[in-house]
Amino acid sequence: MLMVILGAGASYDSIPAYPPGEFPNIDERPPLADQLFENRGRFREVMASYPICHPIIPHLQRRGGKSLERVLQSFQEEAREYPVRHQQLAAVRYYLQHLFRTIEPAWMGYAHAGTNHKSLLDQINRWRSLNGPVCLVTFNYDTLIENALELVGITIRTLPDYISNQDFKLFKMHGSAKWVRLVKTVIPNLINKNQWELSRELTTQAASLDISQDYEIMDEYPSGQLNGTPVFPAIAIPVESKNSFECPPTHVEVLVDLIPTTRKILTIGWRATEAHFLSLLAERLPRGVDVFVVSGDVNKAEETTQHLRISGVTGNFLAGRAGFTEMVVTREIDEFLKRK
Image 1 (cartoon, rainbow, N blue to C red):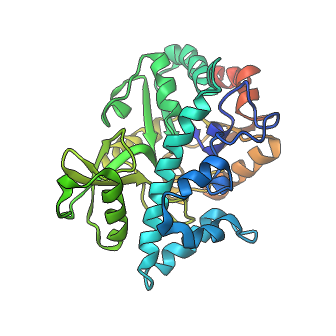
Image 2 (cartoon, rainbow, N blue to C red):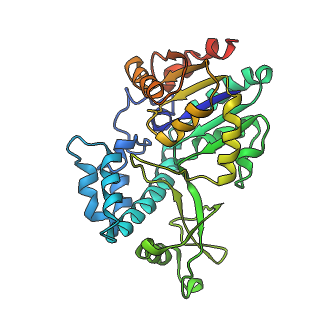
């Protein structure tokens, strides 16, 4: 089995006509992790809608050399004795949901000649017909890979659609801008409140909400209620130490069973810093898998390779020369996919 792992860099460099090196200042470009709170036009507009998180925004924008994950981790730890942090971090989830629902359609307006995701799946599909199924793992909130799957005949309308196809299965480990989780906490007068009113009330009650492991797809945002049940964005805050996935448990179970069948891994724009997922790979991957790492340039690819090795993942590592666009247009992965 081939496993493809997509990080933020895959969405950042997802339209071949607008590679980031040539077009660095497009407001609608999907951000890398450290860019999630940048002072861009659309970002500012969305931030303005969630004033509860405004007190921590300056710390997320001017981090003094710290990673965004490290700063958010510190706020998450402070929530133990300062409950207001729960509300602020809940507002961050709503911000992330709203941001990606806003910028993705705008970004896709640039994609008149397609995306790298579509070209990648086309190349893989040609190889897959002779070599078995493909497991797609993404840590991204957007739906660029879901849209690309339609090219190979897979339309995702419900949560089971992500894992029901025998040829391609998609796992979204950090949730999605279109996912919500059902809330068990009773919200008074729910039926008479609009989505904005409900999202604010859920944010205010964040510290005490009973959020279930039941996931649904929802087009409307910000998330407030779905079919008469309160819902909360199923989108993970990027922190350093995660010990769970923002993903339906049934999806995780299928992924865990698939990992031992992996023979090749292709990573694109992924830094390999998710310790919880890396421990799964280290524990369940067979030894000697072929790993092709694409991460902007050779040096960044080597950094990802080092993270994999340190985590205990063993294999035959190959570093890509450049980023997603160059990998696609030069067909750099063809030889890797053909290797027995």
